[in-house]
Amino acid sequence: MKIYRYRSEGGDAYAATSEKGVVPAGSDLFNLRIDPSAGPLDLERLDLLTPVRPGKIVAVGRNYADHAKELGNEAPPEPIIFLKPPSALLDPEATIVRPPASQRVDFEGELVIVIGKRARNVKAAQWREVVLGFTCGNDVTARDLQKKDGQWTRGKSFDTFCPLGPCIETELDPAALQLSTRVNGQARQHESTALMIFDCAFLVEFVTAVMTLDPGDVIMTGTPAGIGPLQSGDVVEVEIEGIGTLRNRVS
Image (cartoon, rainbow, N blue to C red; front, side, top):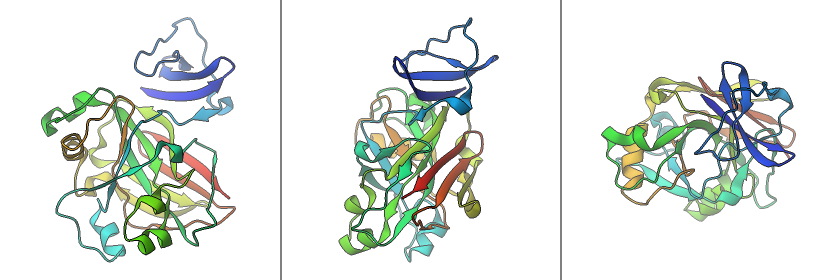
């Protein structure tokens, strides 16, 4: 099932796929109420929002060996995790803003895990029990500031630096999905999630051993090789097999 969050006249609302198409599903992500008598919504006309509103955005660095190599680094022996602030969230079709402080802002297409239950010390064998589903993400990065600072907080945290969407897919095996990133229609990243160094089960166990994750929190699982800069006027798309395409303009 695909779950969308959109702006309605009565406030934020959810829609979900059914036999009739995409139909209204109430206002609570964790207690969806699909009206069997409701007619389908026109997805193209919905004002889509990030499909989830996380309190914590946990991101993973260098989780593909080729990406670590292109940055001049070895593959890490354990996950490198960091946090992006919720203020960085950006809706599908909204605009990524390049900050004046940075001369190089990069795209990083990623598979994103959406947590569905409060999770602490979850074992890898039970990881799926606490996961609601998956969405697309773009870990937008001020690469020059990341290198200058020697740590990642500033370079990863500007407003608009965390696009998510367009939906949450709840019925998906993330083990070997094709992930593609395009800029102005040209392919820049194309890789399988099978090449992640640490898979989703490992990441859920690792992160929840560090911190409690609440429903709605997300784990960004890392980006493959092929990262590159974004310029004003660009359109960047992150497409993941089985989920859809996250599209944003750049200003």
